[in-house]
Image (cartoon, rainbow, N blue to C red; front, top):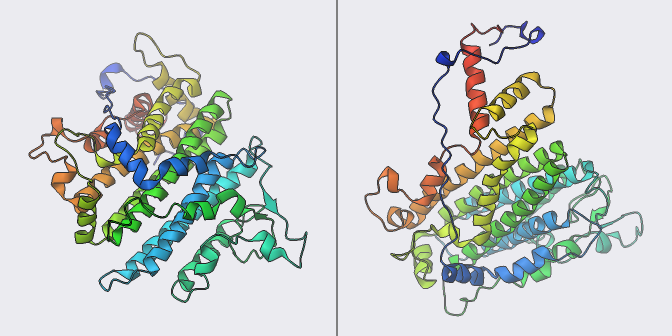
Length: 445
């Protein structure tokens, strides 16, 4: 550890060139694009994505700036409640019910945590504060339950069904705990011990319209119980992907407006959503292998010899989200208030080193760290997705039906995980700063 008297001196950020470690910092990203248009169209059709997008993009409360972000998040949560009812209604004797219950409950809890975080940040942000559609319990105490709690959501009904009662009530308690720091609650039937105003959940989320999209176009000709599980899994993922895209648009606007601490908060939300997406994909590991592969054949979900894109790239929203996360690297010079040296000099690296040492603009450090956290979470998602694909469909499918791949010709998922950092200047700044410490006997020079 550094000596205790280090803070009284300023570090010298220049080191003899011969003592610097050699760093190769080429920036080459994998060229990702969505799959063939026909495959993307089939994916959208199966998940009813055009109808979902209409619900995501509807603006029912023009004075509520956070609506485009919270609405798809709440709709993903409602689909999770539907998924929970599917699991509890599963009549198959070989289904691993206990692990299914735990997995869906964990997924719901993690979504509620992110939703609560978005609600907290909303109230601290003057750009989004106010305009939240809520009902006050004190307005009509004789009929507050019908006015203030959802009547269309599945969760209150699951909390009264003997099969799902325990899990649903634990989820309601999570809502109560996670929303404690907010001035309002979600209105799902949670205890609301503080008597706070309740979000008009039915008007914001539109549960009835969400559940109208629970059927798939192949229900009549596909007799496979995993069909609705796969359908719900991907609807949850797509809703959160859309939320992330809306957050990234707000991050860009906050950086341009110099609201860096707010941008950092949204970056951490995007990081958490990438981790949540990995948890959603893990649900495929719980599905029956034989029935899932039969469903894959029934839906004609297979990699053709001419198709090189991985299955996840049939989601055009996921491809756009990945590109938007990569493009955060272009904001680094603006955050550091340094112009890029046209001759390739280390201006950005030196500015980052000084920022890390001085701690004078902590909001910049928070934002840069959060942006790198997004990169780490995103790359972990694609690496984990490759492993899930291998376990669920087999290594041949995960490799795009290519055998004997070399490191140079590996699939796009592996390339994304192995490609160089998106923030080479920040990486170099930390490397050299660490080298500075290591070569000065752990004391400031």
